[in-house]
Image (cartoon, rainbow over all chains, first blue to last red; front, side):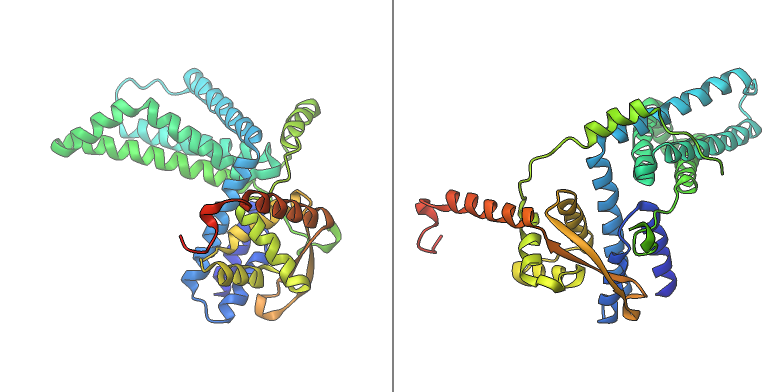
Length: 195
Length: 131
């Protein structure tokens, strides 16, 4: 319970949530509540914290989305100038693209977190949701062809796997960048002098 | 890691003004429940008893996250204030956050009560206690 308690505190500090809530949950666990109940409460608190931060700071969320898209556009522009010229598909090309995708997404998440210090992780998540939605719409027709095709044709499956891996890595990259970029927000409990 | 500069101050002022525009101080259903519970508990109002009291009085399960989010919102509106108590071992060394209703908070609860009584009065469908 102690290690999971440390993870919960780590998450709360990065999200700027009140760690007194963790104390309340531990007090309830001492009275017989289960670990499942504890984690359910932690996840509800995190979900509400993120949702409230985005809802109450819509303009900031819009700014985060605009910042993220601007950085993405810059990376696409740079890739078009300096990216490798590979006409034929190869595993090497895909590996290069995936590595570049991962690195650029980490960088994007990091910058979005760093330029939105008031609510770093919620703003990174707002951008992540928007870019996944955008990417989903942008690649909808090709994704549909891959999905339908891979039901009957084996040759489509590796391409579908590559498509899904790319989306997964982009998501992980943005999240990692956001978490690296997010400074833990110490509450007044942790540092009474700042109260 | 080096610090990335934020947007220019004029932009921040603009966004700040929009974010901080005053919002009306009316109480939602759950906000009213929390305010009444904090008033009822008095000096002992912190997360655990507030949540338990609401669960007992309303008969519905309430998440701690919901209670804290509501209390934070009420605190931003200036209707409640909070102080930290001493850390205790059974709470993993974490302090209790005690909440108290402020004078504007009490006034808002009274105003909400008056509004509800005004709406209640004269409704024949709700008289007699049988639906």
